[in-house]
Image 1 (tube, rainbow, N blue to C red):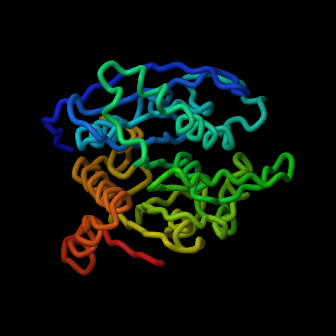
Image 2 (spheres, helix red, strand yellow):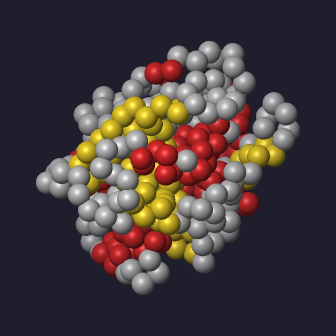
Length: 309
């Protein structure tokens, strides 16, 4: 993935106490070194086996890309991160599934405070334009922010974390529907079988790799596209050809857990998401429609796009 020549700044950690959380919330902020009216992206990391990719220290290829494109990128470390070393005996461990959307809402509630901690960033953001992007377990988090209700396996309580303040929502490699969740991971992570896409009514982009298949989770082809097919519109689906779960390496530079390392694929995923967000922020922006025309039915295209109203 060729790096932009646009200078960016990164500031971390911003540490904020949060009531009810086992540890303080640690955040990293990345932004272009210059420019004003900068929209905001909240980037939610996955779970995964790595210590640091699943934290504010990960997802450098995506954070750097969007910062260079003029966004303020805010990355929380959710409580499932192995860097925190929280006990597996705590409620909701190891995924801490309901605290993750709560982290994102806390950031929205305290956006001015968070921005003010970064030298030179105050007054440069457009807080009316905020998007959320999540990968894997982060995709589950963004699905909840889009309205997917989850029934707590421990209590039977239905949790609705829909967040209308977001102007764009992007789920990358999110878990699919409960009926296709038939691998051994269902016993480890029962909450992933407790979601209801029927209630996911807010607009969202679902990004699915057509080779993202892990028998630990499901033997169903394109199971991770269920969020598109099982939810009401408006929704969009970006299918990335040849992509496995890390989509060429979005979670980190030279990450060894990336089985399909491909900088071209990483760039394609980032550029496509950028087009979607631009059009979601501005109804007169044609970037997403142009992306469709450049992919659908075009020989050699890296992916395809479906949409439903």
